Amino acid sequence: SQKIEQNSEALNIQEGKTATLTCNYTNYSPAYLQWYRQDPGRGPVFLLLIRENEKEKRKERLKVTFDTTLKQSLFHITASQPADSATYLCALEGPRGTSGTYKYIFGTGTRLKVLA
Amino acid sequence: GAVVSQHPSWVICKSGTSVKIECRSLDFQATTMFWYRQFPKQSLMLMATSNEGSKATYEQGVEKDKFLINHASLTLSTLTVTSAHPEDSSFYICSAYRGRTGELFFGEGSRLTVL
Image (cartoon, rainbow over the protein chains, first blue to last red):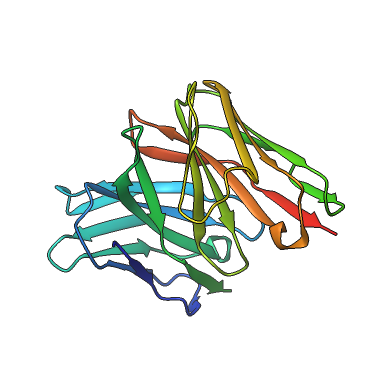
């Protein structure tokens, strides 16, 4: 079955630097992969979606890459700020449910702390 | 982004009572909603897929009689934890699937504490 691996250890970086988070999956390559941000005690917030035929996607200070050969996605935050401190979750489609909708599998997330 | 409203955000109840959590998609019609459970420092665990107008599809190991899901309209899904026990204490999160874009929009979550 599909498994997602994210570094469970917290990532601490200095303000202004680029944070890079890794998401590896073990089985089939999904049609698309998503990244979410989750703050403590809150629901995840959608950030970016990248399709299998896209190598890279950008949104403001965020950049996501998707390498289907390596079975890996990288999530970058440039010019990081203390407000970027949160847990970042990687998600990809799992098997289709009986309704035909894809179910999403989430990684455990990586906690990012940006130090002022 | 789209807005999904979840209510209540936290609830404390006595063991043996039932608790209902509502999930509303405020600005798009969601034929499919998902219910997740999350333990501290763990990932989201999918409990069930809620489809408007039909029975929910539960994941393996999730008791359908314990966690009743109703998706009566395109904008509302409810999760009822029946005869709650302390081990049901958790953070429950719903999400609405926007098929057009493939995005999932999450509610703010509901913290359930069963005494």
